[in-house]
Length: 299
Length: 299
Image (tube, rainbow over all chains, first blue to last red; front, side, top):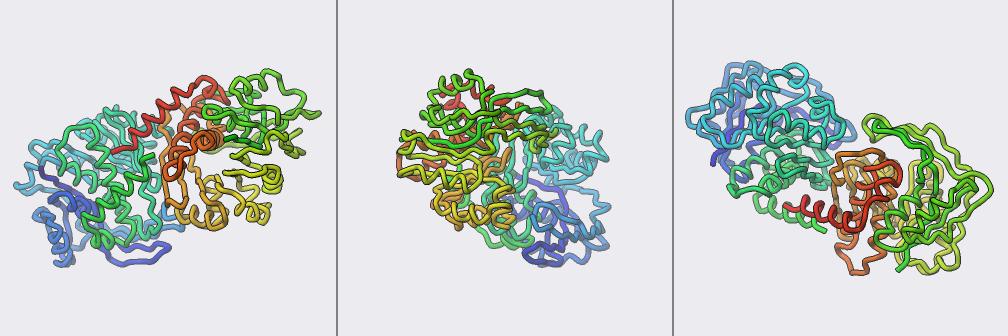
């Protein structure tokens, strides 16, 4: 089993009601691969500028993340600056500098092309399709998307969907894609567009899974200390795909366990700025949190 | 064990994107007692006008609800008219005629004063305290409240809270009462005001329980066909209190099972207008739905 992720590497400057941080290592591929690294040895494909410190690459490698697909290009690394509102659920983007990520044309190293598990982090469906074509025989492909692509590249997205096993999107995006207000109907409608399974993220309200086994709804892990929600969705995805890559048992139950692990990883990610909290955790803590979560949901 | 509920009996005229109904039997005490009747024989205290059809009383009695506390007064029954928006989560109140409910001064029949379980449906905290004084030795008292009382009778509410075992309120009300945006912190802050346990309702996103055993979060039952959300909260409460009245086992787990039953009753209530769907269900269906829900939450 082998998992490859293609996504962004960024420097995030974040302000929340609980503090602020400048130029923290972030981006979908960072959070995803870090979260997945507790289950497997992820392969990372991304691009950074000449300003990317060697220490960051070392940090990823210390988690046994294969960075041979992380290319350095002339120019600067993607930068994002944002401020979260008091409720921690909404945010304003203050600055976006795509820099080298703006012309990113992902090329998978030859050694990555036999990957069995593929995560196409949020990106244009055209680029996501190009990545997919480079993987020889994927067993499980999951993609993330966002409102921007649903609005501006709907046709390209609709062409990609039947080629996916799973699609990950949030509730407002599911509503936008299907024009359904009821999330159960929305999830089922997304499945009709092609993906075998669909995961709808509802932030602090948890997530829903739609698959051949029906609907599965789980609450978020009850987290009191939300310091920084950035990266929660990608850590969730990393927990899901990392776990799936590590567990070859037949369904049913595998996807639900993966969702539970994803929930735990997301709950850890938001307890610190950037990767801070994930850097402090261990597989033992993750499993302890999973057991507590399992107990909480039993009655 | 014996459960008494004091609340409103109303005629609801409701319009949702899925249909409409005129003068349907509703009100907190109707939904609560009907939902609770699948577990116990609830005692109902309320007031109606001379226009209240005998058939409605017979309907409640057919569920072995004791209506000897349901008094008829000169005038008309409480009437409410509302329209739900496309999202089914928000609504406009078009008309409210309190009628006989406006001067309701609840008096418990002598035979009700030994009740062990008491539900004080949404009402002024002054009236709720007056009801409580009439119960000799309550074992478990739960109350519902709303933004109106938090805003206009905060002191009276704060005086009532330490006398309750449980308080039921929704997320925006918890925010209003505690000034906390994070629902975990809000729930814990409400507990500090007196109630032994606190249940925060989050509508389609489920509910949270705060007790000595910590935090317990459950999703709503995934319901595709929401026809009319009216009465969901009171059916939830009826399922909880009805179950608690019927199960004398020691904690932990009892409150969580009760929350799960409440969730199932609420999911049934919203699948029809007024009491329509609850009228069609049986304890067997409720238990089947509970088992499916339990399976959904296991991983």
